[in-house]
Length: 278
Image 1: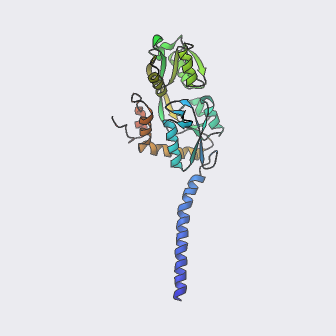
Image 2 (image 1 turned 45 degrees about the horizontal axis):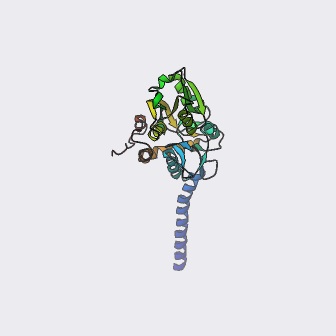
């Protein structure tokens, strides 16, 4: 009898361990399997190669503060992150058609885009600046009327500048590099782009000047309307990374001191830490 009881005890102990393992291990598996992605267990992310410091290519690899932020989101979701380069114009339609799960770029939320995709919680508040040559400086965006301004094809900044300077002539280019080349060659009078990119160009080229900053809207990540579970999971990861200081550290790492986190971000994510003063 004692040997039988001991055998039963050992059996119960083994069964207990198996049950405990079954309760813990599948929880992670279910978390992963519940997220339907373009490639199983992988977050496939579109990114731009030319929009430093947001999303660009460096030493042959994706880089930038939103690229790194997306990598951190992938870790939170337990997914590998695979970046695929694309142009801005096709980014949202491709997410809509589930070619990509999302994009490593703070896309401005507009009614037209909301009709195609869902958007995550804010990852920024769009701010833009007009860049011009110092020898023909445009000090205010509103003064661009009657002038020719370069903007990335498909950008939501096009209707913005049309509203601020109704007589402006917009020339669309495939990327910021092409717009900059046109500006430097005197083919256009200005270049209208996001604040961080504009400040980077001004810092790199002493012959360039910037206008005042204008607010362009909420920036967020696009997700297919057919994937609400992924949207909710990414939203949860964004909230955590905002509040634990990850976003703040990445912003400080990649942006010049003159480009500050918009105040609206601190309102959206109470408790989000401010950058440390140097």
